Image (cartoon, rainbow, N blue to C red):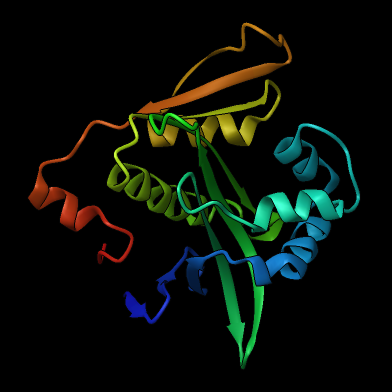
Length: 191
């Protein structure tokens, strides 16, 4: 079941939770802070490749003030009344040449293994294709087993990072889809 909202898409994830996936905005900085602080220490380490308890103001600005020419980010929230509670974020940032982009998908510990990461990644892939990007990549800790399984599920290639033996580089070629298929694959498409 899918409803298209004014600015986002409602999805039902495994377990029956109704989730709104919408673009992330600069006004979401405090929500992003709460989301990061609520992650387990392991999840924060895997996401940022370092340990931290709370993000700096500079990091929050980097995560929420997006350059529309190079960046895209989606937040997944549950909505109770007028209050949004973040449970996942997916983002990418393209290089200045506009050919490749680095991506990250983070899901709250309690919402993992429910298909939310897949939904966020599908939105990122569709958006990257619409922008004409040629590939997506991510560098992750070699011991991040959840990412390894997620990458296999999404069909990402992986190889050791030649610059850092503690990391693995995952990548996905973005082959253009035929126009009829591309229309169906967009972020608002029913699945």
